[in-house]
Image 1 (spheres, rainbow, N blue to C red):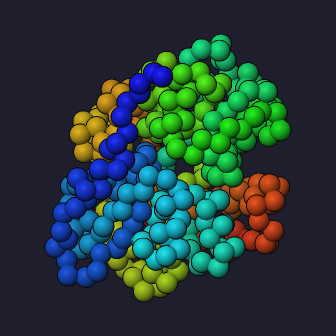
Image 2: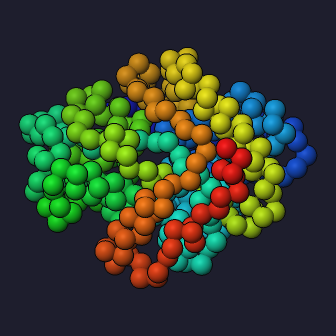
Length: 309
């Protein structure tokens, strides 16, 4: 089987980048991140001391998959986390009062295998697509295919929860296509996969940052400081993204393949998702019979943070 770039950094990054002791005496805000593009400004803010400069102690907790992240949120192991609209709806239905405080700016995409001749999204009709089922990944796949006239029943979803394995199977032609977040999407295309579609070009916003309602009420000022540092880091990346290419690999430990090939997303000021985006995600969950509870968009959001911007 073809060897692909090692992703052991997903495991070791927590002990390498975020282990420094906080100077503040207050209990640190514990925020979960994933090894993806959404998390880059948080990594930069931590590495460059922006959180400390704002007067807030922050511990970034790295998760390698959404299941571990969601379990940590429910167990109060973290105060907040990068997440997605589906996950926060599941948390709400399960009785955990988590609130969306802003969007994040990641990128999900669909790439076709190097062999097979698929050149566009319409070519995925009847094909096998690697993804994680009943998750934000499948939701974005359905949305991207719908734009090309391919219905949710017109392709074969292949459940491959582990993203490095999904990438490997894609590159070896064991599946026709795969949905991947950045930076794995860039790693895939850098090794011959064909980029078919991305969520940012289609205006699909699903990645979010959430905090528990209890922490929002208790530590709102600290969370505001956290956001100020985050936005300063985001602006630095936006102003000169090429200056962070080495950071991607040497400190954020993304695959070497992304150093020169990665196309940076543009990080927006903190803003809430459009209510229509939330409603579409809820409707998808109901259509899949994954939830039956009626949820309003306002049930899932807290506007106190974005009010500053």
